[in-house]
Image (cartoon, rainbow, N blue to C red):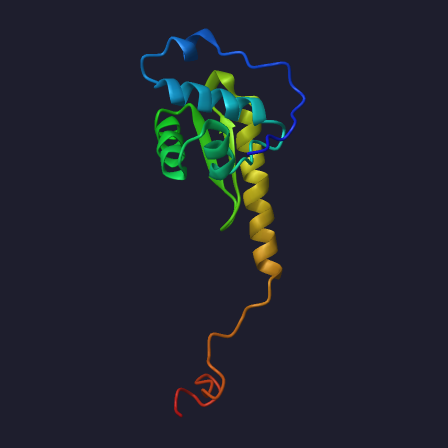
Length: 138
């Protein structure tokens, strides 16, 4: 596997993370990797990225991510069928909760406005009469 180059000087593991009996060693290093990739837009790394980086299976990564989310160390926001954003949560968050709440509200508002302007697609199959035109009779 070829590693992509990243401009960073290393990682720092906060004492509370390193000494936490609540987290496994893998959860600690996965959290630190997410935190290091979490920028203004969040961390968009895929399970495949983490699996390759740590030499684990996708399934193991999914399990560790779910555990970190359940323990409130990260948040995971699903954007659509293929994209998600992860962020370090709590006191380790790069974007603090009021800012995150504001971003979520802006995002929801944008989605709502976009859906209002999206043309409605007919669910009727071609060749099927539109019942509203015929007063419910065919």
